Amino acid sequence: MDNQALTAGVQLGGLTDRTEIKILLCYLMAELKQPITQNQLIECVCGQELVNYFEMQSALQHLLDHKLIKEDETGFSILPEGAEIARQLETVVSATVRRYAYNMAVNLLQYEALKKQNKISITPADGGYNLHCSIEDRDFCIFSMDIMMPDEKSAQYAGQQFILKGQDIFKVMLGITTDTPGMYKDFLKDK
Image (cartoon, rainbow, N blue to C red; front, top):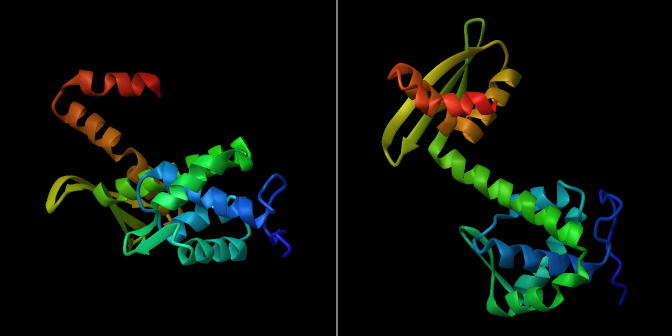
């Protein structure tokens, strides 16, 4: 059987071998030690042009069928047999590809975690768009602010920045409003 994978949408240096794709997926799940959704996998391996989308889907199904991974409502997770394969065969996949996919997956998971606490909503308003930003802990709002943005694209960009840096923004705002320069001087000095 031919083990050559489809290469449409795969950059030079990406994976072109079906076995390597399965190993990479097992490696990612073993290293992350938490579930990862299908969309997150698509973003970190297909969106980065490391693996063809259809080959990734086929590899996931193969891994599920052979009980190397499992899927539930939180996403895909590695099973002990899959973790053992990842550990034994991880060097089959280049270190560069492994590191790149892992870093992308970690960034995606961190962003998703931040989105649960740092929330945004964008609504049309007279003359632009209102960006509502809040930091919430369970059902309690710790901080919120509204910013008028000239267009939807800039509101989306600013919203993404708030998701990533909401804690810093809150710390600076709190330091300024409470006249506590120590809370924001180091942050501003670094920028």
